[in-house]
Length: 174
Image 1 (tube, one colour):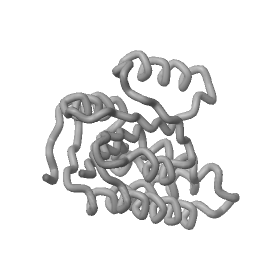
Image 2: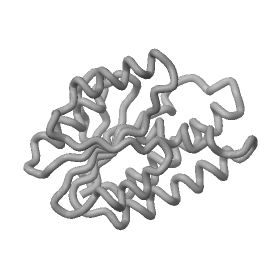
Image 3: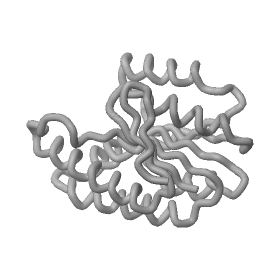
Image 4: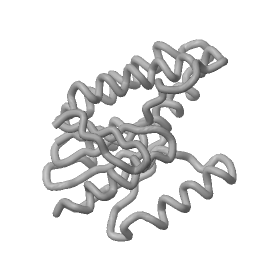
């Protein structure tokens, strides 16, 4: 089963995904896509680690998410990806200068292809970035557009889609 958990920043998406995984009887692997490149991010990652069930296996995959999904998301396992937003941002930032749209499309295609080969329960956390202001920069706009397209593609193939706001889940599909 593929499940997408969407929401804004600090909406409770990660907590909801963790609760969904903990409610099942499957062993859990968390695939983390964030990188501790500054003090604020180190603090954020430390907080997530402290809140995580210590029995869970953690894999860090800031760029290589599709391969990790194929390896980790086997029948009889639950995989949480936290989060697609940071992964896509990492992929766009790693792309050559003006390759934003093409890099976003390539990343989305790789992820969708990998998800088609996944077994078990996959819970993908992603930010809904289309509800705010239009970004000032071309890269910001390319990212927002790529994230919106990625969320749509994942939602289309997911069996369950949940939107979380203020810690409250709203089931949109499934």
